[in-house]
Amino acid sequence: MTTPYKDGFAPVSEEITAFDLEVTGRIPAELNGRYLRNGPNPLSLDDPSAGHLFLGEGMVHGVRLRDGRAEWYRNRWVRSAAVAQRLGEQPRPGPVHAGMDFAANTHVIGVGGRTFATVEAGALPYELGYELDTVGACDFGGGLPGGYAAHTHADPVTGELHALAYYWGWDHHQHVVIDAKGQVTQVRDIPIPDAPMVHDFAITERFVVIYDLPVTFSMEHAQAGTLLPYAWNEAHAARIGLLSRESGDLRWVEAPSCWVFHTLNAYDDGDTVVVDVVSYPKGFVDARLDAGGPPTLDRWRIDLTTGRVGQTRLDDRTQEFPRMDERRTGLPYRYGYTATTRELHDVVGRGEVELEDLPDEAFDNTLIKHDLERGTQESRRFGRGAYVGEPVFVGAGEAEDDGYVISYVNNPARGAADLVILPAQDFTGEPVATVHLPARVPLGFHGSWIAD
Ligand SMILES: [Fe+2]
Image (cartoon, rainbow, N blue to C red; front, side, top):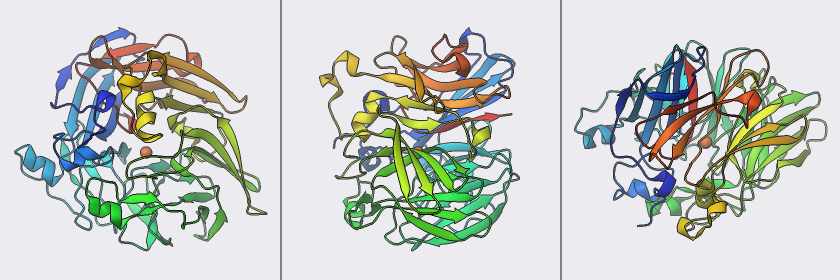
């Protein structure tokens, strides 16, 4: 079996706890909390789950910062019942939706003072303790009628956390709202045929923006076992749903045919809804992750009068993992941050290639800061083997880019990862601090800064 878990994605085999980490530079004193990041880390490369990048068991890597110190690093597998059993532990009690007990591997978020590892497509989130031990699967006291979602968006004005849940056995998707205290306050069913994958979505002040794109559930892939059960489906027309947050009214408009994993941000602009996404020409074209080409940063302008969607390219460089200052989620904004990781895009964007065949200069490990008002970018390059991760913005002062961009970056000289803390306003300058972790952090998916 070929496995995508090699090079930057190669899993780690141990759980580590390390205290008082070595730091170069000075950790800003206002950073009190944890930087957590989730990603797939198969228990064994001989397992079927090691055959697909989206199926490996979730492992969360965390660093706690306090009073200018890096207090600890921990990495922990999410204990689904199967993971607990393999590790010789008792399974944690908790609900299971549709028999889909899965070690959530996609994101890790803070909700109402609690920590959750999340995943989409039918499984429930797993709650983690402060030090990343698994508490158990969570349906928010029965508030979630089905599974949850990998990606969520918090409204910075109302404090509501929005999600779109889906599951192949449903004829609808579900819009779920959780309030700032962690209570499910609203569940709306949205009829959508063909059970499409909806990895991410967007919110504005007025709308929840739903991407119903031509990647739909595939029984053929499901039966293959080692494949993701979703595939490109030309028969499924691309469209964008605008769900009124106030009335629940839903309007569909025709969308550009493409595939989108991730939203940068979206906002209302008079009679237009602006949605910024990382888009691929297609998705899941063959049995793996082929997207028909590399991803680009694009802007959709949805004209509410005509129902037409205009598309412009904000940056044509290959990039992913868009993040921004989440104090501006759903609101007009100026700055975005993305990562370009050659290893990732060769797996996701163009099918698998042998990395040994690529020249050094092909390894483009770069974090990008986008100024969307000026249409300019600043790039901070790291070297071959740096495996830059998702850039998470942490606000400090009032200004939109007054804060830090943090990411795990592999240090090939040490054979271990660094937590790099960049000043967002001096993006190509020296990091304000680099925390030297005692182990590798494989390339993974998404994470959060969760302030204490
Ligand atoms: Fe994602």
